[in-house]
Length: 73
Image (cartoon, rainbow, N blue to C red; front, side, top):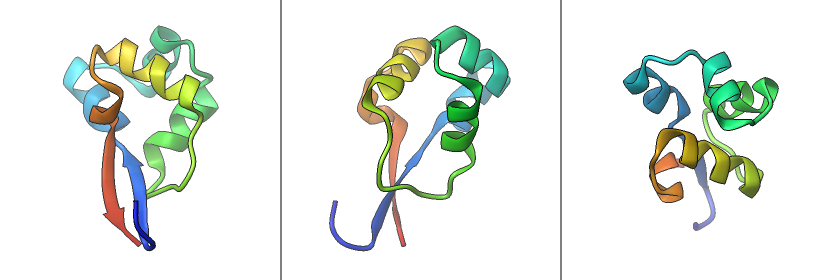
């Protein structure tokens, strides 16, 4: 990632595809709801918990890199 780029997590997109609420994403992944919600609504972030991302990727049955979208700051 270069300067000025942030990572947006595609949690809402994957949850919608599965028909899950963010609460269901939390329950299915084992990631606290507050974390799921923060990641889902953030327009872009520079840091995220790797263990949480792995759990989310497993819950959605996707590769961890599929969760990321690079956005300009």
